[in-house]
Length: 215
Image (cartoon, rainbow, N blue to C red; front, top):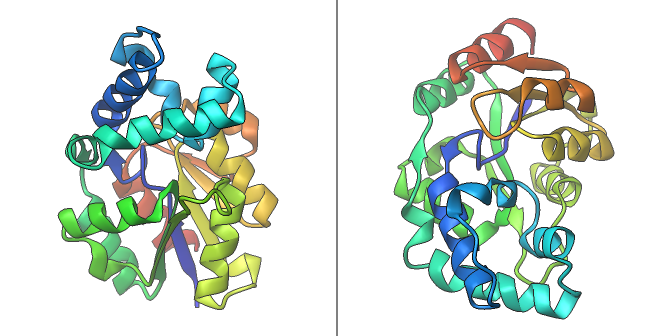
């Protein structure tokens, strides 16, 4: 059976407000002042990785910063988001087309579960996979492999990831599956094409069309 895997932030959910405000909150705890609107690069990659790459935090300090981030995210930031247009309609259409649907996000799995429950979308997903708090599953490729393990599906030709950034495209390549990119999220069409995406789509409706017509 064909299976469509979806990224979460920037693909199903516009989570910019919650993520950037929580990043701002965490950085402030370390004496770093940033405007929330300048912290969009926190959306997509694992938290610890972003603190290390952009602020030079050693691993232990990055882990502390991630904990500070989640101090605000758990009660408040998780809900500072909204679904993109036509998400539920597209999930329903893909399901009716005969595809299984999975979620594969670098966000901790517990938060993925909560968000899908919050938006009443959980019933559409056969698998909801995310990062683990202990860091054993963190990269996009590792989340995708875990998704595939739970699905019991190893045929790369029957899998497709929908994502919005190069992290999705490159993670899919590492896991051996194709990826289509959406431009309404947090990555650009140019970035997606440079990363080797299979197709660039402008809306969830286009995602539905692509899957029904070609997958």
